Amino acid sequence: QSALTQPASVSGSPGQSITISCTGTSSDVGGDNFVSWYQQHPGKAPKVVIYEVTVRPSGVSTRFSGSKSGNTASLTISGLQAEDEADYYCCSFTADKTRIFGGGTKLTVL
Amino acid sequence: QVQLQEAGPRVVKPSETLSLTCTVSGGSIVSFYWSWIRQSPRKGLEWIGYVSYIETKYNPSLKDRVSISMDTSKKQLSMRLTSVTAADTAVYYCARDRSLSAWFEPWGQGALVTVSS
Image: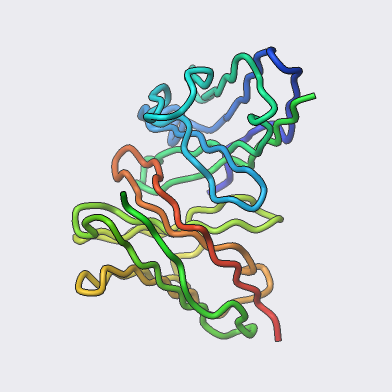
């Protein structure tokens, strides 16, 4: 079970938009619409920002959005703010009912 | 709201068994799935497995060494990992697992476990 593929790092200036990709296979990301995204600040537990590909939990900023095409899911953050600087991880349900995470992406707000 | 708290030894010797518990407060334990997840600098987040009232499921790469159980009377989850090595050094989290949708919320604060002699 290999980790889903994410870019190691992305960066953007305040106010800009960035997109983080998460690539898997037809047995995970490309299967059902069960991809979630997590934000993790240093020393803190991860926090869900998107689930079921596009759904934003209550309390999460509308600047966070998710999408999927084929075996690749994406997280977009618009109107970047300093507080968005964190690590981001994707996670997918798999065909054998397990879960698999991406390797993580470090977002730097310039 | 539901809160989770991990507990257990923070240092384990190589070849021994790592044991952690997670106490659930503020909600039902039997109505949900619960996952253990770990995070090491080398491997990022890694799903270990889940337990529910009716089933367990493990990461194929760990299934020969891990067992997860639920004690409904204590509202606790337990995770045991046998024959540990330095590669098992990580922060271990418990989290509520939204079963078929496979997303996690909330998470415990995490417990750093170091494998060292």
